[in-house]
Image 1 (cartoon, one colour):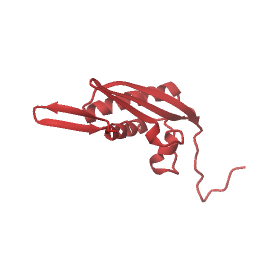
Image 2 (tube, one colour; image 1 turned 120 degrees about the horizontal axis):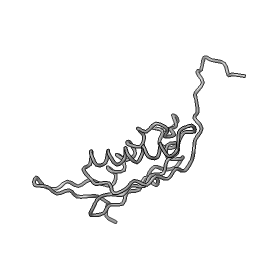
Image 3 (spheres, one colour; image 1 turned 30 degrees about the vertical axis):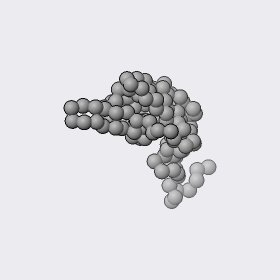
Image 4 (cartoon, helix red, strand yellow; image 1 turned 180 degrees about the horizontal axis):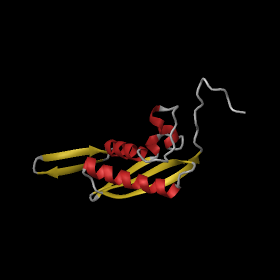
Length: 130
């Protein structure tokens, strides 16, 4: 099976951008939105951010001749308006992919899988509250 990619041809030659690059841009763009659930226990908070699942199965990209269509599954922190967080992710992902990769984004579908309570870490020196 061939790796998914998009080719951009101009007067200087050809640029090939892999699906992995587009997925990385989408992940980083989504992480910039306030209200995305994160975990300090995993590298970059990605496990909690994507609902405790492997990130490879929660960001999907579908390439066509016209551009790319992105699907993301996210978890939102409790207390944030779910629709506003999802719209923020849509806007960031589309903007960053178009600006950084030069690829037209045909759509960004967001699936909010869970709402995660915000976990605050206790300071080690302070006693537990009763």
